[in-house]
Amino acid sequence: MITRLDMRRRNVGLTIIALIIVLLVAGSAAPQTPTDYFPASEWRTAKPKKQGLNKKILKSLASRLRTNQIRDLNSLIIVRNGYLVVEEYFNGSGPEDVHTLQSDSKSVTSLLVGIALQQGRIQSVDDKVVSFFPEYEPIKRFDERKAALSIRDLLTMRTGLDWSEDDYNTSPLKELNECGCDWLRFVLNWRMREMPGTRFEYNSGGVILLGGIIRSVTGRAVDSFAEQYLFSPLGIRGARWFQGLPEGLPHMGGGLNLRATDMARIGYLLLRNGRWGDQQIVSHEWLQESTRHWVSYPRAFGSHSVDYGYLWWLLPVDSTSPSQGDDADIYTAAGARDQWIFVIPKYDMVVVVTGNTSTTFAQPVDFLYTDILRAVE
Figure 1 (cartoon, rainbow, N blue to C red):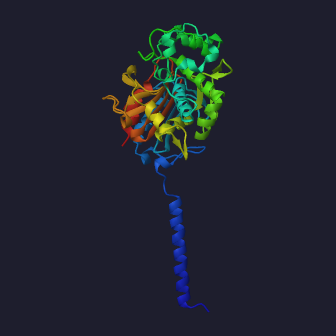
Figure 2: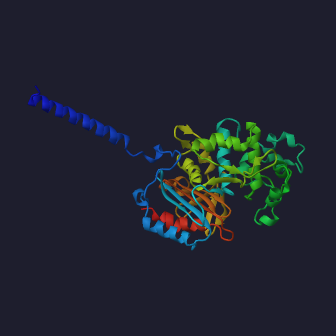
């Protein structure tokens, strides 16, 4: 016979069990802090307003992109606090499309150099470039200037080579892209103009040499190295490279192709100080070094002056004042035809734009300031 006391005890027991279940479920569903979250095969998503962004401003921007008031762009991705809050595609593009990164490839190369350093394969960025290529001796036009060329000079675009890409049609880069020859030999043999470290001159050939150095110190194809130590850990799939000689060397200066949401993973790696889950993919120290202001005002994006680090451009968060470092900076990968990765630590945000523009460059920098940063509430 069940007494009233037994019933009361059983009800109390059931209440306690139910409370424990509720607490366990609530604990498992507790939101992760941004630094604890890393996307698996897909990003988690949220409405912009939930992550402190003005929906009206962003909706207006997307409308202008969709109607080609801002022309010839293919995608706009915004990640805030680890949430994908904007994923828009235009002009027939879609989420599975693989985009040319153009010179965003250079910023990825900077990460790969950092990984090679972290593994002890490269000892120092002050190592001399020619020391990695004994098989190419004798190097043409070799003198004390070429002997002094270091990895750091390649990373900061202060190579001293007589190399200009201002007019692509008459540039050494066009000649390299079309020569069907050994790219490493082409750059190593190119003539010098001045001592390395003297001044900034944009040079994609020097970044191809960095790929050759990674190949030399690892004894393996650079795309395979990138896949194992960068792309695969980040969950990036379908990466493709434009390749040439020797032996299918990837074009580190502009030959990488990725999906837009995977470009955001590259930016998110910087936002999380080089960590992905429980792995330190590239050291925090390397990222700090890479985003130092090594070169001041080498050029402008539209009306916006920028500084340069190790193959990363540095824009100020406040467009009315110069970058001051740390949270005052926007770490920027920039590629021709409007390929962009903006990393904004101050607002825990990554912005990706891809495009196919021909005449206008840097329009995304304009709407980054006039729309996206203004949308932060």
